[in-house]
Amino acid sequence: MPPTRDPFASMRQSIVAASVTRIVVSHIAVGLRFYSKAIQRPKSHPPKRRFFVHDAFVLLAAAATTATAGIFLWGLLLRFHGDVGKASKQFLLSVFVAGVLDNVTTTFIRLSILFFYRTIFTAHLGLSRIALGLIILSGIWGIGSLIGGLLACIPLSKFWYIGNGARGQCQNTRVTFLSLVTSEMVLDAAILATPLATLVRLNVGWRVRVGLVGIFSLGVFAVLTNALRLKYIYAPSGSNKALDIRLYTIWTSAHVTAAIVCACLPFYKPLIVGLATTLTPLWARVFPRPTKGSPGRETPSPEISFSRDGSREQDGISMTKFASSTRTDVV
Image 1 (cartoon, one colour):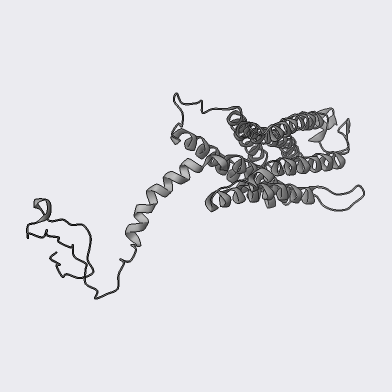
Image 2 (cartoon, rainbow, N blue to C red):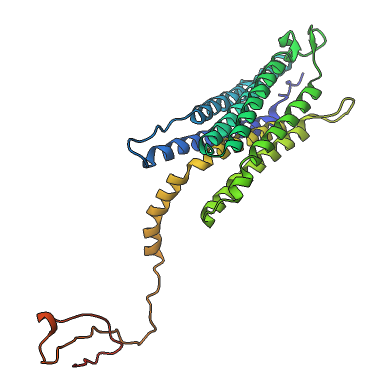
């Protein structure tokens, strides 16, 4: 009898790569955020506090996304011993727990961004109120997604026990997933668009505008990745479309990672300024600017002035200006 084939061998490499990338990039982004805050010089005396509510939420998001990726790795990397039922149960359990934690992670990221809005837009009462409303909606969405996940099946274990022998009942997961992802996309778009009108009217230099465009573009990418994961996991009732867990996992990891980086980008200015200060002299040494003046032109010499009696002014040579020739004029 031929050995039983591992049913998850084809997706294992892609999901492991996506999970490891998710952990590494997220931790680098959050680490650079706090490093930039640490090297920033205080503008007031005594210095203001450097740790805010939005910092706490981004730390919670980093911890949650690490736990999510770790659970995915646990579900795929345990050695396959030929028992398809046991392997499927373990994988489906990891998919369920990771799905719930993904919703928790994205909620923490939204709250971090929105509390940051409340910090920087204190003078804009309208934007501050909009951010507060979105904070409430994000909290409701996060709690609702958590409750919906925990009530996906009754009993809950039916989600990862396959076969006709499993007792219990599960809700329509297709409709639940569609409603969650659609409402999440609307919420993300609202968060992204909230400060846009104010930022467009800012009288800032082109470097700052380029940075703002980069942050906005990354936010748009995070919204688009949400749409892509919906494409690969959702199928209407009665459809024969196969659910692609591998691509769903990859785009979910891209969505969460891009959101964390987007939440951290506004804090990188001290790091970028310090890096530019360090690299500018090195750049000048490697690529020196050409000296002014054309080849063969004589170097101008200082003009020496004398008083009418022939003595030097102020008992010394007055180097008042550079003459265009080496001729000395006696007044």
